[in-house]
Amino acid sequence: MFALPCPALPCAGQGSNPGGGACLEVADNLPADLSVVPVRDSRNPHGHALVFPVDAWAAFVTTLRN
Image (tube, rainbow, N blue to C red; front, side, top):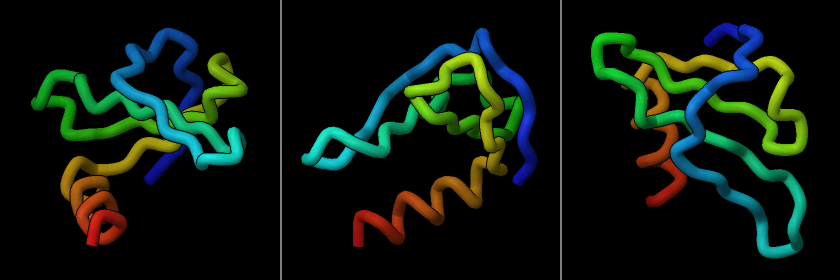
């Protein structure tokens, strides 16, 4: 995982808790050859994004769903 400034990330989806806080934007619609999934705070769209390897992100999402 690393962080980088990405003000122009194409956002594929957002998620938040039912109380309306802690929103994330996940750009999981990038070309497969990039092999990364950037994630950023939706309240700071011009800030840095955390960038995860695709396999690490998939494992994280699978764990949350189970």
